[in-house]
Amino acid sequence: MTLFAGHDLACRRGERLVFTGLSFRVAAGSALLLRGPNGSGKSSLLRCMAGLLAPVAGTQTWNDRPIALDADAHRGRLRYLGHQDAVKPALTVLENLVLWQQLHGRHDVAAIGRGLAGVGLDRLAELPARLLSAGQRRRVALARLLASPAPLWLLDEPTTALDDDGVACFARMVGDHRATGGVVVLSSHGDPGVAGDVLALADFAPTAAEAES
Amino acid sequence: MSAFLALVRRDLQLAMRQGSDAALVLIFYLLAVLLFPFGVGPEPNILARISTGVLWVTALLAALLALERLFVSEYEDGSLDQLALLPLPLSLVVLAKVLAHWLLTGLPLTLLAPFLAIALGMDQAGYPVLVLALALGTPSLSLIGGLGAALTLGARRGGALLALLILPLYIPTLIFGVAAVDASLSGLAALPHLAILGALLLAAIPLCPWATAAALRQALE
Image (tube, each protein chain N blue to C red):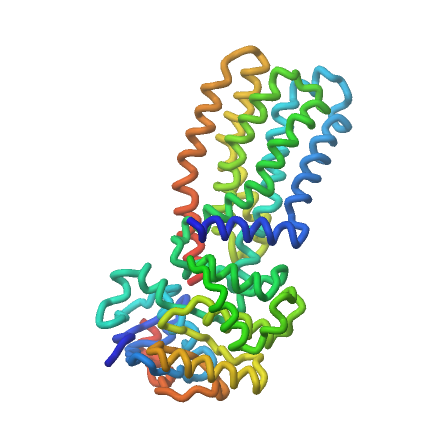
């Protein structure tokens, strides 16, 4: 059964049409891998899915209902992870996680513990985030996904800066998420350790005539 | 509501940890005001005459100092994306951040002003209205400034552009703020001016966060 789908999406960045006629379908418990060369619109598509960027054409649906009808509900069911980790260096690892959980209107200490354990940071909880390496900061960002759960994960190159162990943690996280019926859409150049349907962005690149218009 | 308060608390906590711009703002206020006796000369009459204007204009410039960073740090570390995706409407996110900005700059400026008024030889009769006028005016300054900070987000030399954009919008607050204090100094009713300052604030509370949120969405695209 299709849970999250897009129909005939087109996206423009500045003057340039990035992709057009793009459709996708993701069923509950499955993963969609976005592949394509630099500039093919992987990040733009993820931002469209998150509602941060408005597509110039096309519709997206969740459970066959257009997401544009209820943007608040869509925001509530998605977690987006971009290129930046959104980790405040002045706060400790734990404070960073508690903060975002509170901002999502939750209070669940156990979930934070699971998040820290899930990414292998449980020993570093009290450490100020400014002392973390790039890979450790990325792990904090991933732990945030576990601290305030939501069915739809939109992840932009989530395994950047992660070591082998980090990628294994990530693959385990995604596996658990999918086992509970969650949906993952992620872009990656390397091997993210996740199997799923592949969407090749290059297939939707505009033709020269379309790019002109 | 708890998310709103958590956001205000976070900004205050970050400011305390990082040794924020707030202390800088206060020191700037102190120094800039104390420059006037040196520049204008120590005649008490002249200083007392210009004291209201000096305190207001410098407060306005001081409040401008910390504004540039209001959204830039969120933008640069990706937090702004996350804030835009919260269940909390973006305009309330803006209001929370502006409130924290005011608590860190506008409020201390307001409390410091009467002490600086002593240094400028202002008549004591003006102190209560000075504090009241600043208490009503500085939140408007923070709200309008937030809009400027959002509009100049991502622009090169955002700080200078911000000042050019925002200072003209500060004029109404400045006029009625100064008029309120001058009225009380010359024994007239300050209430009409304070009421207008309050009205400006009441208009700014819903309008500025709404416009700021729209500007931030543009910056995120």
